[in-house]
Image (cartoon, rainbow, N blue to C red):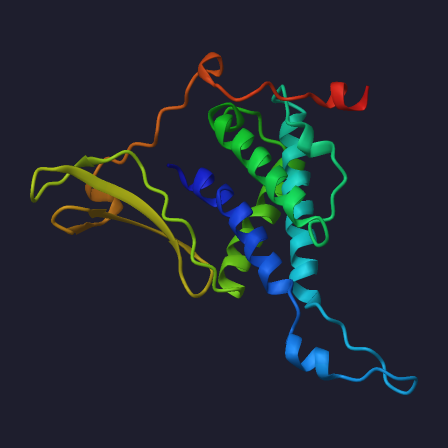
Length: 214
């Protein structure tokens, strides 16, 4: 699993966490608060997670639409008008679809000619992912590469892992899951998973932008 794929797979996780963080600040306090003509009713939801969800969704779709200009077909989810702060389930499903499409086309995306708008959109998205993981203390999924052979015990059980440190920076490590020896990434050759050809994908065909707008 590459760093690119690892980061993208965190997006649905973050949206789900923001949904839970948006829930009533303190239901018991809110329920006890008497609302009358002289007192403004307090908001029952946290506003910051709602805004963060909308910002993350916008960053994901902005980057996705930049990629969709070159990689076809693209998912219909990119042209749906959603507000992640209010349509949590739809946004979560759409985020899964978009990130899966981006990951499946990672090799094609890497071969695209440099483009300032696309690179800016990517920077904004990946910066938001790192910052939100750190801000909300979200435990990222532990996604690993294909295993390689351990130099100590000989088992094919060394994986690369990417983690977010307390400053929001991304760090790569490698460890054998059998003898637990930890490696610097430069010590071993770490292979990402092979990408399946499009013909072998069992997922339903994606609707294109043209089909969606027709």
